[in-house]
Amino acid sequence: MNKAAASDRSLWILPAVFTTLAALRILAKGQPLDHWLPKWDTLAMILVMLVLERVFRYSRAVSQRSVLPRDIASTLVNLYVTGFLTGLVLLPLLNYVPEHYLGRKLVFAPEQLGPVWLQFLLVLLLVSFVRYWIHRFQHANGFLWKLHSYHHQVQDLQATNTYVSHPIDFALRNVLVFLVLGIIGFDPLVLVVAVPLSNISGTFSHCGASLKAGLLSYVLVTPEVHRWHHSAHVPEGYKYSCNYGVEFSFWDILFGTFYLPQKDGETLQPERIGHPSGNADEPNYLKLLFTPLGLYPRKGLKGASADRELKSPG
Ligand SMILES: [Zn+2]
Ligand SMILES: [Zn+2]
Image (tube, rainbow, N blue to C red):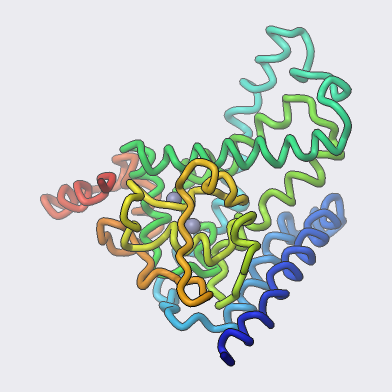
């Protein structure tokens, strides 16, 4: 009874954290600090997650200290290089399409897309829908899974490994849709508010703290929801994985991929986090970066067998 009462009491924490982070992200735009330390709001968010992980310790937490250099390298690359390079390569192409075929810079004029509140909803739904399906495809397609599986080799979800991902895998899920958004023609105000908002639960889903989310898990991808996506044992009946949503979990509910079991009113969590085929975590960032592209020097049969193990499960 005490345990249940404690859970109920902690239910306010996640909505409070999300609201604070939302305010921080929106206010962060265009601040002088942005020039001095770009993406400082994301770094602040990771800091909040680190503090919560120490205050609300998760009983099945697995130390990630041995892979910390890999985590830091991957976070810095994906925060500061991946988006920049993807934009550099794709923006000329994306800008060319409306200019060449429609004779203007944007696909639609802002007034064609309806009132600001409708555009705001449209952006949130569009972004989360596209990311859900890209993520689902990253589990079903052999080559994309090769890239994405590194994100699934982590042994526990923690703030430090939120950005552990091959840059191409990261760009497909987290950069591409936002670049396309820029040429559609949405009101700039809508993008300034909706884009930072859409990333909050996606980033926070890797918080390793023991936080109860209650009904919030049926709308947003909370850590309780995302842990099942990383379960070492894929729940029965779910082909590759469950809970593919990046920010909203209602797409999983709608498309039959949601999984969040309950027992005696308590939300259950997976026994173990890890790769579904049992692959060990990859502490070497250069290996993570170059092996799936065939650019990391192999050492005889050992390398070849490691490559076979990376194949998609199921
Ligand atoms: Zn995944
Ligand atoms: Zn994840």
